[in-house]
Length: 177
Image (spheres, rainbow, N blue to C red):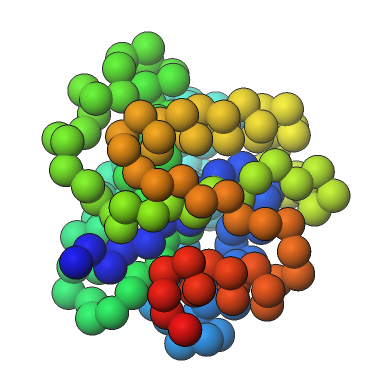
């Protein structure tokens, strides 16, 4: 059984906060590739940033997401990903106009059940790594939902509830306890 769980969805929808809670509960988590790329590029003066060179940024995000997936193969138990390969290829398909299927080999990379954080304007905020507005975040969410459904994943929408309850909901849906 594939034990890789992806948490995707709307930018600023509470994914990273949920992953932090899962880590506190003892689960292995993988931080969002896009945010790590932005931080690395900002630290080194690089230009592979979504507001400077989207294609270069997405190429780095995809490479890092693929690396994360390969590294996780050595882990035992559940591994929770804050976004992943499908997020990156969905963005690449949008930017390049190439069909989503051209980026994937048809295999399931994650558990069949994918968790999407819906748009949540009450908690959405920009920062140095998230400069896009809420409308862009919602459009991204719509593309991701369509992509995961098109690829045959069982999409579960995370409820807008307090953090501990949200983590409990996710764990129950995975039958973790």
